[in-house]
Length: 167
Image (cartoon, rainbow, N blue to C red; front, top):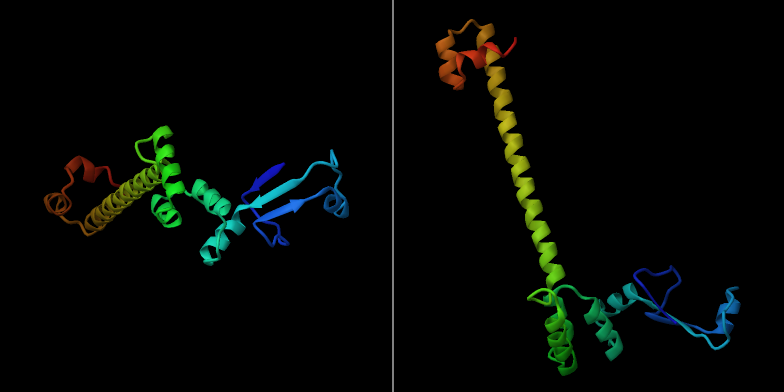
């Protein structure tokens, strides 16, 4: 049995840990069968091993390539290896997107949409601030008994809009 974990336990030392029946008994876990071997693959340890420039086995490289959703980082892992180049080409053929990096494209589209929404919210806030300041100006000018024509000239408001702003 193989378990792929996107987390590590504090005591996790290796990327792949093998649990045999005897090791399971030591840890007080029961086994369904004495023939069963359990392998835990801890993905954070694999990424840690890669980023600390430790030598990866072909299996580790393959798993890392399968996990990677950024095409630039994937190219760095592949490094011209023929087996991985073939894998990438096959993956492109079966992908629902024109590019292998469709998850990254989706993330980039989400980030762009978020930037647009942030910009729109910022513009709305600026507009609201300007409107509030103009209303304050109207209140101040009314308190100082400025003529209606002057208030209209400086604020751009109509007489009805000015009259609707209470002191």
